[in-house]
Amino acid sequence: MTRRLISLLSAAALAIAGVSASLSIPAHAEALDDIKARGKMVVAIDPTFAPFEFTDANGRIVGFDPAVLELVAEGMGVEIDYQVMSFSGIIPGLIAGSFDLTATALAVRKERAERIDFTVPVAAGVSGVLRRGGDTNVAGTAPADLSGLKAAVKTTTQPEQVLQGFNEELEQKGMEPIELLSVETVEQTIAALTAGRVDFVADDVAVLATVIKARSDDLELVGTVGPSVYISWGTNKDDPALNAALNEQIIALKESGKLAELHMEYFGVTFDLPNENFIPAE
Image: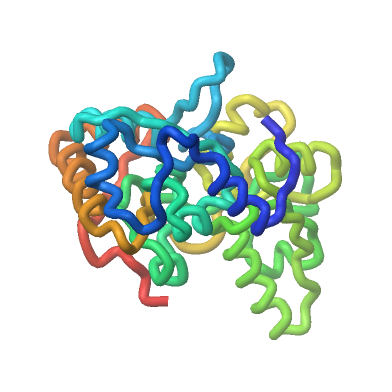
């Protein structure tokens, strides 16, 4: 589902305006008390990141994160009110107090942890490189292999950060950088690749595996790039009680084995996830 590109500022404004009047959330109120009082949690999500979160043929928001969130909400005795928005507007909206939390998959990064609180990780990921089938111009995944090529990435994501880091390395070596096309959705990255506007797409391997399953005749995975990262949800720093309540439910799902079942269902692998000390030092 392709959506028009919007600026970071506009996305934040939409995030604020998108919350219904009946579920208005005062900025920086104690979200857990609000959630219990109204019986609903207002959750920001960008459903364009299959298999983590996406919209099915019936218009329902589905995927790994919604499946986990449904169990978390059940454990807390509340319902879910999704607020759909562009990924680039989610963290600004969360900081502004426009919704209770985000259950969109967020790569855990130090810079983000300085602005929001992360729940304990719900999954892990590593970036991969996707090319058109048989395109030998994309011969590998080292920075030198990708020098001078064009790449499509989803804006403000871990793969974008990885390639930006590659460009710093290439610049230091006097080599041609990777030209980045940063867009809002996975669909836009794939469209750019198939139209020949870029040479490759960088995204989470779980996402690319879903794409390859549907397009195995003309797209193929080259390999992985960058480090593995933990995937978490986010809460406002003024809402430690909500963060603790979400952590309690996620840890319970982990201990029961249900979280591992969902990992296998959506990713085909399980992850060894920590309950503490998971924020990177850099």
